[in-house]
Image 1 (spheres, rainbow, N blue to C red):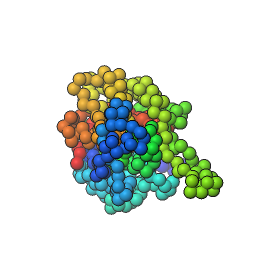
Image 2 (image 1 turned 90 degrees about the horizontal axis):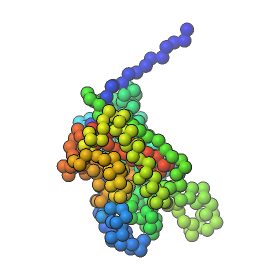
Image 3 (image 1 turned 30 degrees about the vertical axis):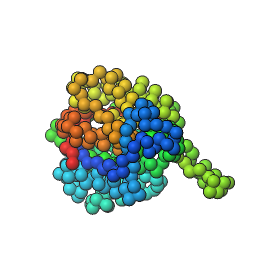
Image 4 (image 1 turned 180 degrees about the vertical axis):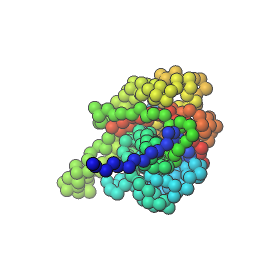
Length: 342
């Protein structure tokens, strides 16, 4: 008879125990980014809702920003680095195919050799990572998981591209996920639509670029982030209502129960359309961090959660709907209890 494999058991409930963020020091106005794209402050505000954004300096690296956000998240959760069993980093702007950023971040934080890996789901990456982390703790594979969303999008955008230069910015946010006496993370509704893969993309692959170097030498143009804004807007505005309602229903709630909505900070107009379509209660706090932070892709939801809490628009323990969408196109949504923050 074959030997029976031993099994591990986890916990019934999980929650985000602590939140930390890092915002780069440099504040960049619309006037600064408008000139290279022949635009204006009014044009940018009208189309995106953005007033300012943060650009990282050379010293504000993916590793450094992640570690700073993570330290504050662990302090808020009252969880020491040696208690973290896994680190998941959601990012699209770690510009190495290998190794991943996560092991270096874990070492920077003085952790005890946890599992550590990156995921690439574009702007939906943070919500994907929340789902993975919660399931790891419920399954007994990890006791506590550190989830980080971090981007240096200024490394990937063409400052003369009218479709992207005014939108994207830099920053990091982190949460610690661990056991909870009560449900703190609802079921995740997620998916992808590969027919829209072209809507947000790197405009050429690296082999194509290397071929251009061989042919044109220093005249070769590096790959940049490209986006078909109208296609993304239409897809998000018309496809995400059902995703959000499914996430609320799977959490055992109705829209009137939602205290805060924290959508990916892609565009102020998309945020307004989504909130109106869901018919959320009048006192529901709506994250609008894009005004001061821009679109930070996988970092946008933790940064937006922190802004809501810091401004007193909502409080830890409130029921919040998180929803994100991005390159792939990938999407994910879940209802969570908002964490303590540092």
